[in-house]
Amino acid sequence: MKDSQPLRVVTSCRSRFHIFDQARELAHHQVLYQLIADYPKSHPQRFDIPANKVHSMLLAGFINHGLGRIMRYLPSAQRVQIGQWVHNRFSRQLAGLIPKDTQYFIGLSSFCLDALDVCRSNGIPCAVDHGSLHQSEDLRLVTEEAKRWGLAMPYGESPDWIIKKENEEFHKADHVFVLSSVARDSMVRWGIPSDKIFVNPCGVDLAQFYPGEKRDSVFRVIQVGGVTLRKGVLTLLDAFGKAKLANSELWFVGGGLETSGLQSLINTLQSPGVTFHQPVPQAQLRDFYNQSSVFVLASVADGFGMVVAQAMACGLPVIVTENVGAKDLVIDGVNGFVVPVGAPEIIAERLRQIHGDPELRRKMGAAAKLTVENGYTWRAYGDRLVAFLDLQVAH
Image (cartoon, rainbow, N blue to C red):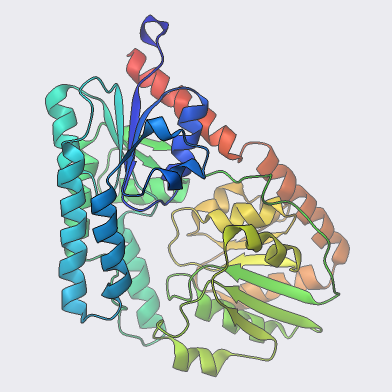
């Protein structure tokens, strides 16, 4: 770090995503210069981010979050127009808020194009933080999944304007931050140079997610996330039905069933013991994990999947597909299993294996917990990030 002075890092986000956790870790290392966000200062404070480090775009947030609540009731064409307006307006406003003495700027993808231009003009090194696969890859995979089930593409999947804008951001930024090797590989396939990509997996809060008492003997499979085509809900339903496990249940926690467009297929695939739960606050998720026996994320495209790390921290073995970024945490056959995308028969086989061998289940769960403890906490995420930033600014 130059002159042994604290590094001045500005990070930013429209909504929250994982950026509040990122800002907290930057603050822990005393390098957070500013978090620019469209929330009141009180909200980042809940994440232990000092109020004096937060620039609140309060009016923008009031408009953005208000529009978000009503968009679901509007025709799809209007939703696309409003979504584009919100993204572009935030990006333009953000560009005028970056302090000129910033030493490194991080912008959330699709919300920072104008800010990157300002950074380039002022000689400020900058990065785009992207939590997903490359949107073109994402669109291809979800399109293939829709065809596999004979469905039309759901609204909101990677519109052309987002793909175009993010590609401009990726090429303008000095670096692109992603959360997994799966995301990195998707970027490279779509033309982003590998030497500008920094892979830093998300962390998990071990004070919030840890093993607890299971109150019954039911073998319970759990998936946490929205009921969407992308999350592989249909594949997991099919797998659970095929597995035919005694004394078992399948829980989906995350909501969205009514608006998923998947209801008719879900009705066809649903078997006894399947329950769809509404979303629950993070503080309540731990109990859902602790009442479960194995966690599954059957996604066709997932940049990371923080819920995988949360489940592992609670001592659950996990089953994830090859397109789930959190597969970076999974040692096949040791703390879980990695399976091909769209392979319900293989998921069913793995479920039967874990169901039929309680000792294997216990060993895998213990190994999963140990994996998270040794490198996948938020503190470890922050350590890796700040080491990377120090190196960039020093050069």
